[in-house]
Image 1: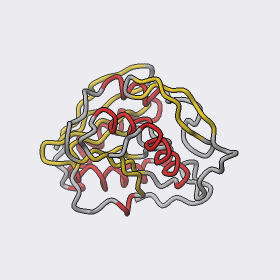
Image 2: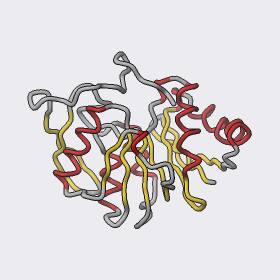
Image 3: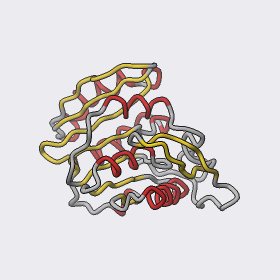
Image 4: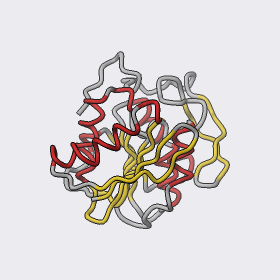
Length: 209
């Protein structure tokens, strides 16, 4: 798995202070809400366009089970999962401590008590996910991204699926080919991959066991 350091765009060791946090009005799960964000996390001022495309494309999440937001940032995907499926357990996973602190704050603010914000190593190894929704951190580079997905996609439940949004200009099509061919051969994942949407320069990929 990608090991971040202090220079990594996606890694901030320190939670934001009260002075650094700011309130932003967004829409989550069809609700107009106010969340806390801060510099040092991805897209701190709004729900980024790729995530918007993802959330407009995916069907409603499973009502129960373990659900995963991989690379949660301040929480737009994980909060959507948690509010849409209140009887499920939602794991919001990130390596950025600032992001994890923000998503915990936002879950508490919105009453999403079923959301668990965690570093990757804090998720029990035996957890299997009914679905994974992710705007993955493609800018960590292709080897690290492949390692990240090879770590997590095998943890789909037998009937589970993953929904990934990736910019076309950031390698969506090569990633789709890798998931469909090299990844199963290299990791025994047995994946099927289809492009289910293409909008505003982004591809949404559905990955199944």
